[in-house]
Image (cartoon, rainbow, N blue to C red; front, side, top):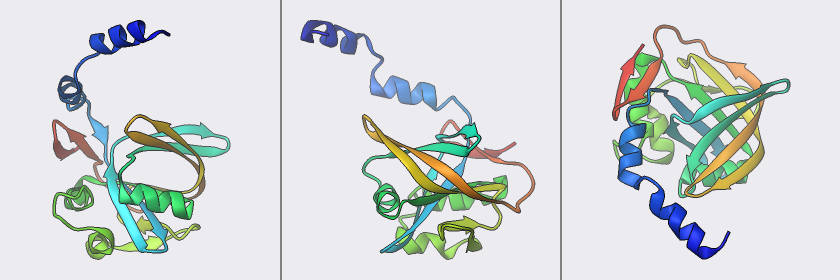
Length: 171
């Protein structure tokens, strides 16, 4: 496309704040994505997670490019997606960075173990997807991580944790 067409298309797009407000209305399951690297354990709260394929088992998760956890995942080649129960809402807050804790400090809460890759697995997770990185795709401000699932876990029960309108709640 030529630059005039590109400029016209950009001008027609919704602004970032309007898009954020619209996305805040979309309920999303809440997960903690973890990894284990040279600097130790790392993790973050994520809502952009989905299955890709059942044969072989494959998932995707979207993570902001500036994330320290993303850098650790790219270095280690492993990650685990832990789907949270509603009772784990405080863990979601801690791993979102809202409590000011980073790195290993975030793992002081909750019971953590491991499956196949060594990435931290939350014992109370409704489901855990232990993955090896199969591909990373750059899309503007984020990276889409494609993970080959090598092990499954999850021993939690009860309602799942949902994020909507910038708040956590159970369903």
